[in-house]
Length: 196
Ligand code: 21W
Image 1 (cartoon, rainbow, N blue to C red):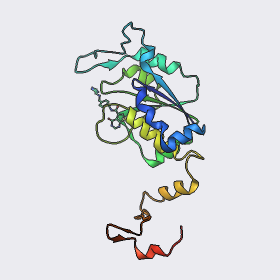
Image 2 (cartoon, rainbow, N blue to C red; image 1 turned 120 degrees about the horizontal axis):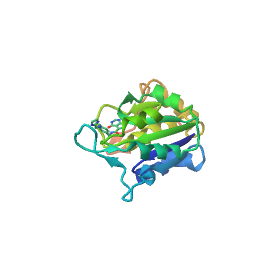
Image 3 (cartoon, helix red, strand yellow; image 1 turned 135 degrees about the vertical axis):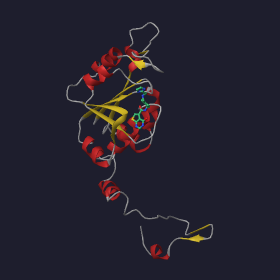
Image 4 (cartoon, rainbow, N blue to C red; image 1 turned 60 degrees about the horizontal axis):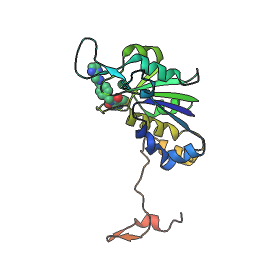
């Protein structure tokens, strides 16, 4: 799967190079492309936002800058997702559905928001990760990437995907490893005769 990320803070995504997702990127199972929206500013001061029409606090990201950043992505058949607190809350059904896409474009906004006209033009879907307020769409985009990646063939073992998806953790159980006694607490006897 190819994932293009449109963001003002591309450095935030360096944590994706760790652990299981990092391995999946190394193994070319996931290709992540970071696009800094600021690179598309025509302003000499690299300005990307402006005051909102109608007044109010904060700033709004300009439509042309986001549109030019979007157009720099070569591919017509990508699904474009705007990470937004107003979006539909992500769940495992949506995660599985997205994992079947060949190409995703993730647009990350900030508290200020993005001019609605460019959203109307380029966005296919709006997704939130839950009903609480964050400072931007970057962490939500990483949550989406992490959850979707687990369903991409080869990222984790088939057994792991099946075990975890077995009804929302209802079959989850406490786990133990060596030592057999830790701080005077023993591993449950029922587990002790079993070879791993
Ligand atoms: C917070 C963006 C508040 C916009 C109109 C007038 C992406 C997120 C985010 C953020 C506002 C997600 C406004 C769960 C989240 C995200 C930053 C409201 C101000 N609009 N999932 N004034 N929670 N959050 N905009 O916060 O971008 S997915």
